[in-house]
Image (cartoon, rainbow, N blue to C red; front, side):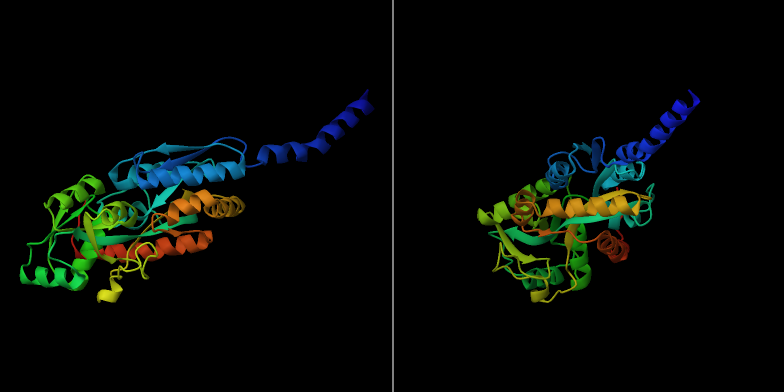
Length: 323
């Protein structure tokens, strides 16, 4: 009996590494992907597209959970509070990762230390646009008009501290002009009032601006990327019109809580890179005039680290405060 018990114990022990390996296999259950913005917007759409592609590769569901509010801070904090086991991931966006720490008097996380950058998903330029009947046909025209009448021209944005607003604030600072900021609850609301003549211009996300430009309702004056876009090859960059410092790319990428094991980060980075190269995801990004991301976790971390002080300076110079 004793010999049989020892043999059984030995057999059980020999199986232990296999059992533990099965338990440690990732992922072994559904993953939650927190999107810090409301359903229906670009962050939500891209989250669902990339999550779907990654889910297929990983063989487990990835459920997108929208936690909107406070300029992306609420959802980003939810990612920060998750366990670093790979089952809480999320979309890390330009505003909460590079702007909000300076914009808000207090946020409950440090984007540079409380998150694990995994993979850049995309970068997208903005377009400076006016109504088609506007007298302004170039950036030079706007600067001349603003200098002739300081504090008279107005621009719309989707809210204080967003990429619409910060692009214009940077432009004002670089060009040495003073304009009126009209913040709205969304970019679409600002674009509607631009169309109605309540404001004179707007820096709009390219994907949102394209339908109005192609439909002849808006005139594009410049793009904020370093190079011209293949979707609008005749549209000059801000740099070409004398303002190289007004280079703005609204970006977002996959992040997780701090403390994630390096092997897990490497695995998720590889899966995200693979997802970005699927025909469906790639087409969705490129068709909006955005750049497909990818690269290493270290490259994404370097982008966040570089962007944070740049936009902190813009926020401080323009004396922007969150409502």
